Image (cartoon, rainbow, N blue to C red; front, side, top):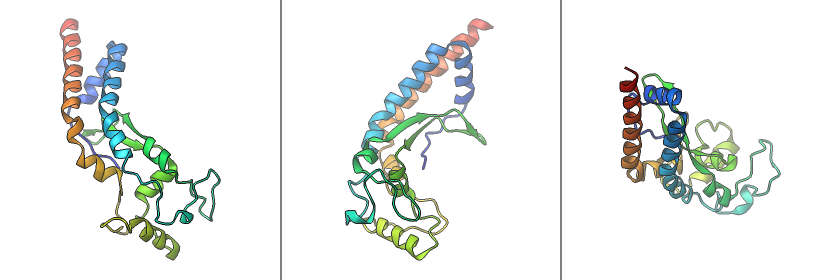
Length: 181
């Protein structure tokens, strides 16, 4: 699940900066990740210690159990494995510059399970995950129990800082273009 702070023209600026000043590019990327780290920590803290009310419903050891061989859900890993990532790839006219990513497999399943549940056991699993929340999984729809709503709720934490980093990036690229001309 991704929430984007959209700015147009960033991909070209980053491409130019990468070509002409790799150290400044690395500094800008590091700056953006540092700006987003408090948000990642806050979002990660919202993952529960156990995915269900009863711990026995999903294993918390490293071995995979059951027919589907789910990765384990470990609350401490779910909380600490939310990390900011930087991407300059394009999708149509948009560039996803900064996103938060859950790197723990069990937490990924916890956060997004539900869009394709078709068996009785799968629907029961999703229903049990949904019990603490007021939302319900709608078949065929993308969902997020923690990542999307918490990121959206706390987006204001980083918007101004991202804007300043992008202004810095644009200034460096513009200065280089003017010197080259």
